[in-house]
Image 1 (cartoon, chains in turn orange, red):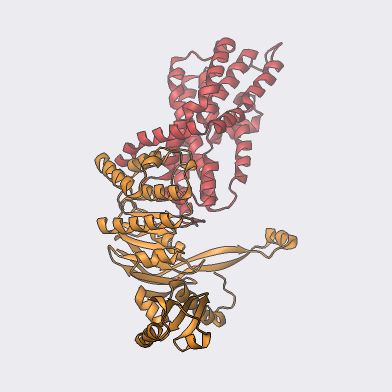
Image 2 (cartoon, one colour; image 1 turned 90 degrees about the vertical axis):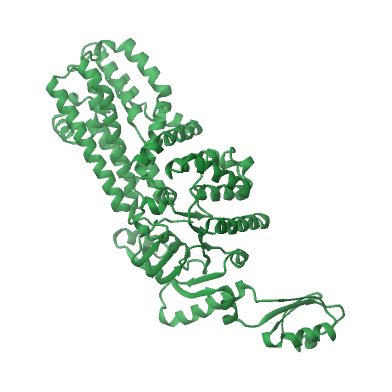
Length: 335
Length: 265
């Protein structure tokens, strides 16, 4: 279980305008500003939940994950993970958690991943039999076979990420903090990692807190999402609930089989996109049956699909609103 | 603690594998530790016709080759490594493992010692036995204490440099301090000159600073006959400095890690 109460993390940052004079001046007189990376965030995540942690760049997602995994000491507030205070970095906690950072590697660069795995086995004190079983399971799920004995520096980004995941999970943690685990990976590899995370979560009843810029990762993996912006929590709930609350209208996409003008399409719903014969309109949920009937019977369209608005769109709108609300209150702050 | 001890053989094994992977880096590192050879050439030339103070040409050969050997066995670049790991954020991965980074770094550095010494030590050994053998100590007690003294010298050096690296938690460019450290170390440790050739105030300062115990003491045990009381004092001094430097290293770490900003990622 993960629990935070009014968690804050502030950084003191040296601030200097550009130019030679200000560089010299900063030698004698330094100016600092306090950046509130995490600002009073509270949530609880139960064991076995998969939660997406979303927010724009600099919102405080990674900082929160680092506090929860014990890398950073919070400025104030409370964080508990698996009944431990993470900042104390007790062995019992470190053996139950893992943090995967898409942009930081724990694999030893010039040695094959197998050496890092062996090191982790010893450091995490994993019994040899359990280690072999887990490694076999991870090798099969992630198709690591040919990669285990190649020097890490010779692996592609996708291969390295798979090996990173295995290194992070060899001690069978029950809480996974995944920070952009699919960054830079191609679609096939993203799908493979997503499937793997879901399988691991189900097999080990592991709690997963995931950040990703790929909304598909979040939609596919996380029934619940927590959204933060400028260090503050602005939404915590299920994904569908968020979509409904922010934008209850559906997106109806279809392919025209005959020439139809924009005016005619506008009667079905607000025209969002027209790309050749492919059209997307926005239709309020209650008007969907009538709109679909009209499209199929009168306009004779093909390949009709009804979808929720894309999460990216919802979030963009959400962050835009939050920024507007913040602007008059905090004119100087720059997260 | 038991868990840590169980992990050590694997840490050493992986350390050896890492060392072997970085061959060029080690060759360069070895070249940087050959300053004693320069000093050797200089001082044997000075003492070629008659002894300089109490040092004959053979004494200088023995002294500087012993310095080379001790420096090779006890030198470490952990300060640079810790400081870079803090500055670049790669310390995060070490902090996520249930093993104190002091132990992890120590194991990987200890694993490297035999390889680092592979090139220089045989040459130094042969030269020492052929040209400086007459100046080597034959005191059984001193001979028996060489290995423990080397171990303590390694521990003091490693701990102080670990603490120096951990200053990166407090100041971004902690490595600027490394030059200051090396200058002080060279002056007071016996790296440039034997302790008994140092000018009065430097010799007095050297007696109370840790640097002599990081290099000078094992070198003196190899090359100078000391009275039993003096040997005991040198060893007790080393033990005391080993304890102090270990406490300092762990204390600086403990205070510093609270300020870690885990940049990147």
